Length: 360
Image 1 (cartoon, rainbow, N blue to C red):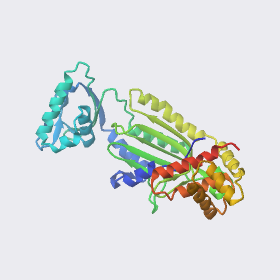
Image 2 (image 1 turned 90 degrees about the horizontal axis):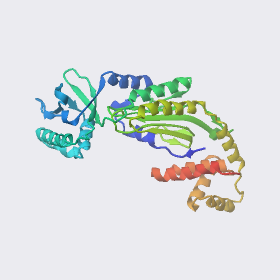
Image 3 (image 1 turned 120 degrees about the vertical axis):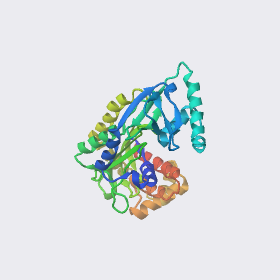
Image 4 (image 1 turned 120 degrees about the horizontal axis):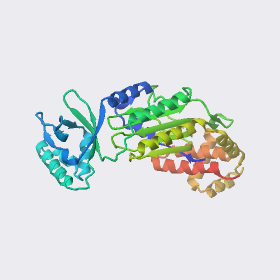
Protein backbone atom coordinates (compact mmCIF):
# COMPACT_ATOMS: atom_id res chain seq x y z
CA UNK A 1 0.00 0.00 0.00
CA UNK A 2 1.56 3.27 -1.12
CA UNK A 3 0.72 6.32 0.95
CA UNK A 4 1.21 9.98 0.14
CA UNK A 5 0.03 12.87 2.27
CA UNK A 6 -0.40 16.24 0.71
CA UNK A 7 -0.70 16.53 -3.10
CA UNK A 8 -0.32 20.08 -4.42
CA UNK A 9 -0.37 19.32 -8.17
CA UNK A 10 -4.06 20.03 -8.70
CA UNK A 11 -3.88 23.08 -6.42
CA UNK A 12 -1.05 24.43 -8.57
CA UNK A 13 -3.18 24.06 -11.70
CA UNK A 14 -6.17 25.69 -9.99
CA UNK A 15 -4.16 28.65 -8.70
CA UNK A 16 -2.26 29.40 -11.92
CA UNK A 17 -4.68 28.93 -14.82
CA UNK A 18 -6.24 32.06 -16.41
CA UNK A 19 -9.98 32.21 -17.03
CA UNK A 20 -9.75 31.27 -20.72
CA UNK A 21 -8.05 27.96 -19.83
CA UNK A 22 -10.73 26.82 -17.34
CA UNK A 23 -13.66 24.57 -18.24
CA UNK A 24 -16.64 23.58 -16.13
CA UNK A 25 -17.55 20.29 -17.78
CA UNK A 26 -15.96 17.35 -19.55
CA UNK A 27 -18.12 18.14 -22.59
CA UNK A 28 -16.78 21.72 -22.79
CA UNK A 29 -13.09 20.83 -22.58
CA UNK A 30 -13.62 17.95 -25.04
CA UNK A 31 -15.20 20.31 -27.58
CA UNK A 32 -12.33 22.80 -27.24
CA UNK A 33 -9.60 20.19 -27.68
CA UNK A 34 -11.35 18.35 -30.51
CA UNK A 35 -11.91 21.59 -32.44
CA UNK A 36 -8.18 22.31 -32.60
CA UNK A 37 -7.39 18.68 -33.45
CA UNK A 38 -9.68 18.77 -36.48
CA UNK A 39 -7.53 21.44 -38.14
CA UNK A 40 -4.17 19.86 -37.27
CA UNK A 41 -1.74 17.99 -39.48
CA UNK A 42 1.92 16.96 -39.28
CA UNK A 43 4.79 17.45 -41.72
CA UNK A 44 8.32 16.10 -41.49
CA UNK A 45 11.02 17.73 -43.60
CA UNK A 46 14.78 18.45 -43.62
CA UNK A 47 15.97 21.52 -41.73
CA UNK A 48 17.31 22.95 -44.98
CA UNK A 49 13.71 23.44 -46.12
CA UNK A 50 12.99 25.93 -43.34
CA UNK A 51 13.24 29.58 -44.33
CA UNK A 52 12.37 32.47 -41.98
CA UNK A 53 11.46 36.04 -42.97
CA UNK A 54 9.23 38.94 -41.84
CA UNK A 55 5.88 39.13 -43.62
CA UNK A 56 4.18 42.32 -44.80
CA UNK A 57 2.81 42.96 -41.31
CA UNK A 58 6.25 42.65 -39.73
CA UNK A 59 5.61 39.27 -38.09
CA UNK A 60 8.09 36.43 -38.31
CA UNK A 61 6.91 33.64 -40.59
CA UNK A 62 8.41 30.45 -41.94
CA UNK A 63 8.19 29.11 -45.49
CA UNK A 64 8.81 25.37 -45.42
CA UNK A 65 9.63 23.81 -48.77
CA UNK A 66 8.28 26.73 -50.85
CA UNK A 67 4.76 26.11 -49.57
CA UNK A 68 2.40 28.63 -48.02
CA UNK A 69 3.84 30.83 -45.25
CA UNK A 70 3.55 29.45 -41.73
CA UNK A 71 3.26 31.60 -38.61
CA UNK A 72 4.90 30.43 -35.37
CA UNK A 73 3.11 30.65 -32.06
CA UNK A 74 5.02 31.45 -28.88
CA UNK A 75 5.74 27.82 -28.00
CA UNK A 76 6.89 26.78 -31.49
CA UNK A 77 9.27 29.75 -31.69
CA UNK A 78 10.80 28.70 -28.38
CA UNK A 79 11.28 25.16 -29.70
CA UNK A 80 13.04 26.44 -32.82
CA UNK A 81 15.38 28.57 -30.72
CA UNK A 82 16.05 25.66 -28.35
CA UNK A 83 16.79 23.36 -31.30
CA UNK A 84 19.75 25.59 -32.21
CA UNK A 85 20.70 26.41 -28.61
CA UNK A 86 19.73 30.04 -29.16
CA UNK A 87 18.19 32.18 -26.37
CA UNK A 88 14.53 32.60 -27.33
CA UNK A 89 13.86 35.66 -25.19
CA UNK A 90 16.88 37.45 -26.67
CA UNK A 91 15.75 36.65 -30.22
CA UNK A 92 12.28 37.98 -29.46
CA UNK A 93 13.74 41.36 -28.52
CA UNK A 94 15.64 41.73 -31.80
CA UNK A 95 14.19 43.35 -34.95
CA UNK A 96 12.23 40.72 -36.87
CA UNK A 97 14.51 40.82 -39.91
CA UNK A 98 17.54 40.28 -37.65
CA UNK A 99 15.86 37.36 -35.92
CA UNK A 100 15.02 35.82 -39.29
CA UNK A 101 18.62 36.24 -40.45
CA UNK A 102 19.99 34.61 -37.29
CA UNK A 103 17.63 31.65 -37.57
CA UNK A 104 18.39 31.16 -41.28
CA UNK A 105 22.11 31.14 -40.52
CA UNK A 106 21.63 28.54 -37.79
CA UNK A 107 19.42 26.43 -40.06
CA UNK A 108 22.03 26.59 -42.84
CA UNK A 109 24.79 25.39 -40.51
CA UNK A 110 22.66 22.55 -39.11
CA UNK A 111 21.54 21.47 -42.57
CA UNK A 112 25.15 20.83 -43.63
CA UNK A 113 25.32 18.00 -41.11
CA UNK A 114 24.67 14.77 -43.05
CA UNK A 115 23.17 13.22 -39.93
CA UNK A 116 20.57 16.00 -39.61
CA UNK A 117 17.30 14.24 -38.71
CA UNK A 118 15.09 17.12 -39.86
CA UNK A 119 12.03 18.49 -38.10
CA UNK A 120 8.45 17.45 -37.44
CA UNK A 121 5.95 20.30 -37.65
CA UNK A 122 2.53 20.33 -36.02
CA UNK A 123 0.53 22.72 -38.18
CA UNK A 124 -2.97 24.15 -37.89
CA UNK A 125 -4.81 25.27 -40.98
CA UNK A 126 -5.90 28.89 -41.16
CA UNK A 127 -7.84 31.00 -43.65
CA UNK A 128 -4.76 32.66 -45.19
CA UNK A 129 -1.84 30.72 -43.68
CA UNK A 130 -1.07 27.86 -41.33
CA UNK A 131 0.26 28.22 -37.78
CA UNK A 132 3.00 26.03 -36.31
CA UNK A 133 2.15 24.94 -32.75
CA UNK A 134 5.18 22.68 -32.37
CA UNK A 135 8.49 22.01 -34.11
CA UNK A 136 10.10 18.86 -32.74
CA UNK A 137 12.48 16.14 -33.90
CA UNK A 138 11.06 13.54 -36.30
CA UNK A 139 11.29 10.89 -33.56
CA UNK A 140 8.80 12.76 -31.36
CA UNK A 141 6.00 10.30 -30.57
CA UNK A 142 2.95 12.50 -30.31
CA UNK A 143 0.22 11.54 -27.87
CA UNK A 144 -2.62 13.88 -28.71
CA UNK A 145 -4.47 15.76 -26.00
CA UNK A 146 -7.65 14.26 -27.45
CA UNK A 147 -6.30 10.79 -26.55
CA UNK A 148 -6.08 11.72 -22.88
CA UNK A 149 -9.54 13.31 -22.96
CA UNK A 150 -11.00 10.19 -24.52
CA UNK A 151 -9.30 8.01 -21.91
CA UNK A 152 -10.64 10.11 -19.03
CA UNK A 153 -14.11 10.17 -20.61
CA UNK A 154 -14.07 6.39 -20.82
CA UNK A 155 -13.00 6.23 -17.17
CA UNK A 156 -15.92 8.44 -16.11
CA UNK A 157 -18.36 6.42 -18.21
CA UNK A 158 -17.13 3.10 -16.77
CA UNK A 159 -17.57 4.44 -13.25
CA UNK A 160 -21.26 4.80 -14.02
CA UNK A 161 -21.00 8.54 -13.57
CA UNK A 162 -19.64 8.24 -10.02
CA UNK A 163 -16.48 10.13 -11.03
CA UNK A 164 -16.94 13.85 -11.68
CA UNK A 165 -14.87 17.04 -11.73
CA UNK A 166 -15.27 18.65 -8.27
CA UNK A 167 -16.42 22.15 -7.38
CA UNK A 168 -14.25 25.04 -6.30
CA UNK A 169 -14.91 27.32 -3.36
CA UNK A 170 -18.11 29.14 -4.35
CA UNK A 171 -19.65 26.13 -6.09
CA UNK A 172 -18.32 26.47 -9.65
CA UNK A 173 -17.20 23.16 -11.24
CA UNK A 174 -13.44 23.10 -11.82
CA UNK A 175 -10.43 20.86 -12.23
CA UNK A 176 -10.47 20.89 -16.04
CA UNK A 177 -7.89 23.02 -17.85
CA UNK A 178 -6.54 23.36 -21.38
CA UNK A 179 -4.27 25.84 -23.14
CA UNK A 180 -2.85 25.80 -26.65
CA UNK A 181 0.09 23.80 -25.28
CA UNK A 182 -1.33 21.36 -22.69
CA UNK A 183 -4.32 19.97 -20.84
CA UNK A 184 -5.11 18.74 -17.32
CA UNK A 185 -8.19 16.86 -16.05
CA UNK A 186 -9.12 16.02 -12.44
CA UNK A 187 -11.97 13.78 -11.23
CA UNK A 188 -13.15 12.41 -7.88
CA UNK A 189 -15.78 10.01 -6.61
CA UNK A 190 -17.97 11.75 -4.06
CA UNK A 191 -19.22 8.54 -2.45
CA UNK A 192 -17.22 6.83 0.27
CA UNK A 193 -15.48 3.76 -1.14
CA UNK A 194 -13.57 2.74 1.96
CA UNK A 195 -15.32 2.98 5.31
CA UNK A 196 -13.28 2.18 8.37
CA UNK A 197 -16.28 2.49 10.67
CA UNK A 198 -16.26 6.18 11.54
CA UNK A 199 -16.92 9.56 9.98
CA UNK A 200 -13.19 10.33 9.70
CA UNK A 201 -12.32 6.84 8.48
CA UNK A 202 -13.64 7.16 4.94
CA UNK A 203 -11.60 7.21 1.77
CA UNK A 204 -12.64 8.41 -1.66
CA UNK A 205 -11.37 7.70 -5.15
CA UNK A 206 -9.66 10.25 -7.40
CA UNK A 207 -7.64 10.58 -10.60
CA UNK A 208 -5.99 13.24 -12.68
CA UNK A 209 -4.16 13.23 -15.99
CA UNK A 210 -2.04 15.68 -17.93
CA UNK A 211 -0.47 15.90 -21.37
CA UNK A 212 1.06 18.20 -23.95
CA UNK A 213 0.83 17.23 -27.59
CA UNK A 214 3.39 19.95 -28.42
CA UNK A 215 6.18 18.75 -26.12
CA UNK A 216 5.70 21.00 -23.08
CA UNK A 217 5.43 18.03 -20.71
CA UNK A 218 5.15 14.25 -20.69
CA UNK A 219 1.86 12.40 -20.44
CA UNK A 220 0.93 11.43 -16.90
CA UNK A 221 -1.93 9.68 -15.17
CA UNK A 222 -2.27 9.40 -11.39
CA UNK A 223 -4.97 7.37 -9.62
CA UNK A 224 -5.37 7.27 -5.85
CA UNK A 225 -7.65 7.17 -2.83
CA UNK A 226 -7.82 10.15 -0.51
CA UNK A 227 -9.38 11.53 2.65
CA UNK A 228 -10.23 15.07 1.66
CA UNK A 229 -10.07 17.59 -1.19
CA UNK A 230 -10.51 21.30 -0.49
CA UNK A 231 -12.27 23.90 -2.61
CA UNK A 232 -8.88 25.03 -3.88
CA UNK A 233 -8.14 21.43 -4.87
CA UNK A 234 -5.51 20.60 -2.28
CA UNK A 235 -5.70 16.83 -1.80
CA UNK A 236 -5.02 15.30 1.61
CA UNK A 237 -4.29 11.79 2.82
CA UNK A 238 -3.62 10.04 -0.49
CA UNK A 239 -3.32 6.25 -0.45
CA UNK A 240 -2.94 3.52 -3.05
CA UNK A 241 -1.19 5.98 -5.37
CA UNK A 242 -0.48 4.64 -8.85
CA UNK A 243 1.13 6.72 -11.57
CA UNK A 244 1.92 6.20 -15.25
CA UNK A 245 4.35 8.54 -17.00
CA UNK A 246 5.08 8.33 -20.71
CA UNK A 247 7.62 10.44 -22.56
CA UNK A 248 6.83 11.40 -26.13
CA UNK A 249 9.36 9.06 -27.70
CA UNK A 250 8.84 6.92 -30.79
CA UNK A 251 6.85 4.21 -28.96
CA UNK A 252 4.79 6.62 -26.88
CA UNK A 253 1.47 6.09 -28.71
CA UNK A 254 1.76 2.31 -28.34
CA UNK A 255 2.70 2.59 -24.66
CA UNK A 256 -0.22 4.93 -24.06
CA UNK A 257 -2.65 2.49 -25.64
CA UNK A 258 -1.56 -0.32 -23.32
CA UNK A 259 -0.23 1.22 -20.10
CA UNK A 260 -2.63 4.13 -19.60
CA UNK A 261 -5.73 2.08 -20.25
CA UNK A 262 -4.36 -0.72 -18.05
CA UNK A 263 -3.90 1.78 -15.21
CA UNK A 264 -7.47 3.06 -15.56
CA UNK A 265 -8.94 -0.43 -15.66
CA UNK A 266 -6.91 -1.48 -12.63
CA UNK A 267 -8.06 1.63 -10.81
CA UNK A 268 -11.73 0.95 -11.50
CA UNK A 269 -11.46 -2.77 -10.71
CA UNK A 270 -9.29 -2.50 -7.61
CA UNK A 271 -10.52 -3.92 -4.32
CA UNK A 272 -10.74 -1.73 -1.22
CA UNK A 273 -10.33 -4.66 1.16
CA UNK A 274 -6.67 -3.85 1.84
CA UNK A 275 -7.43 -0.29 2.90
CA UNK A 276 -10.27 -1.37 5.19
CA UNK A 277 -7.94 -3.91 6.82
CA UNK A 278 -5.20 -1.28 7.26
CA UNK A 279 -7.59 1.15 8.97
CA UNK A 280 -8.92 -1.53 11.30
CA UNK A 281 -5.36 -2.66 12.15
CA UNK A 282 -4.31 0.93 12.90
CA UNK A 283 -7.33 1.38 15.16
CA UNK A 284 -6.44 -1.79 17.04
CA UNK A 285 -2.82 -0.69 17.55
CA UNK A 286 -3.10 1.24 20.81
CA UNK A 287 -0.85 3.99 22.15
CA UNK A 288 0.27 4.21 25.81
CA UNK A 289 -2.41 5.74 28.02
CA UNK A 290 0.10 7.73 30.08
CA UNK A 291 0.69 11.09 28.34
CA UNK A 292 4.45 11.10 28.94
CA UNK A 293 4.90 7.54 27.71
CA UNK A 294 2.66 8.27 24.73
CA UNK A 295 4.81 11.25 23.72
CA UNK A 296 8.00 9.20 24.06
CA UNK A 297 6.44 6.37 22.06
CA UNK A 298 5.50 8.68 19.16
CA UNK A 299 8.97 10.24 19.19
CA UNK A 300 10.37 6.72 18.99
CA UNK A 301 8.42 6.27 15.74
CA UNK A 302 10.61 8.91 14.08
CA UNK A 303 8.88 12.19 14.93
CA UNK A 304 10.38 15.21 16.69
CA UNK A 305 9.11 16.24 20.11
CA UNK A 306 7.26 19.18 18.53
CA UNK A 307 5.66 17.02 15.83
CA UNK A 308 4.62 14.36 18.33
CA UNK A 309 3.22 16.86 20.83
CA UNK A 310 1.29 18.85 18.20
CA UNK A 311 0.03 15.74 16.42
CA UNK A 312 -1.34 14.27 19.66
CA UNK A 313 -2.86 17.63 20.57
CA UNK A 314 -4.55 17.97 17.16
CA UNK A 315 -6.08 14.50 17.48
CA UNK A 316 -7.35 15.19 21.00
CA UNK A 317 -8.82 18.55 19.94
CA UNK A 318 -10.42 17.54 16.63
CA UNK A 319 -11.28 13.88 17.24
CA UNK A 320 -11.60 13.84 21.02
CA UNK A 321 -8.79 11.39 21.78
CA UNK A 322 -5.45 10.01 20.61
CA UNK A 323 -5.59 6.41 21.76
CA UNK A 324 -4.45 4.47 18.68
CA UNK A 325 -2.33 4.73 15.55
CA UNK A 326 -5.23 5.69 13.30
CA UNK A 327 -6.07 8.70 15.45
CA UNK A 328 -2.37 9.58 15.64
CA UNK A 329 -2.06 9.53 11.83
CA UNK A 330 -5.11 11.79 11.63
CA UNK A 331 -3.65 14.17 14.21
CA UNK A 332 -0.27 14.36 12.50
CA UNK A 333 -1.99 14.98 9.16
CA UNK A 334 -4.03 17.83 10.65
CA UNK A 335 -0.92 19.33 12.22
CA UNK A 336 0.88 19.17 8.86
CA UNK A 337 -1.70 21.57 7.42
CA UNK A 338 -0.42 24.30 9.74
CA UNK A 339 2.94 24.36 7.96
CA UNK A 340 3.54 27.22 5.56
CA UNK A 341 5.62 25.29 3.02
CA UNK A 342 4.51 22.38 0.86
CA UNK A 343 7.77 20.48 1.44
CA UNK A 344 7.24 20.40 5.22
CA UNK A 345 3.59 19.39 4.82
CA UNK A 346 4.48 16.60 2.43
CA UNK A 347 7.32 15.32 4.58
CA UNK A 348 5.26 15.06 7.76
CA UNK A 349 2.23 13.52 6.08
CA UNK A 350 4.38 10.99 4.26
CA UNK A 351 6.03 9.89 7.50
CA UNK A 352 2.65 9.78 9.21
CA UNK A 353 1.28 7.63 6.41
CA UNK A 354 4.01 5.05 6.97
CA UNK A 355 2.42 4.26 10.34
CA UNK A 356 -0.40 2.60 8.41
CA UNK A 357 2.10 0.05 7.09
CA UNK A 358 3.74 -0.92 10.37
CA UNK A 359 3.32 -4.46 11.55
CA UNK A 360 1.32 -4.93 14.71
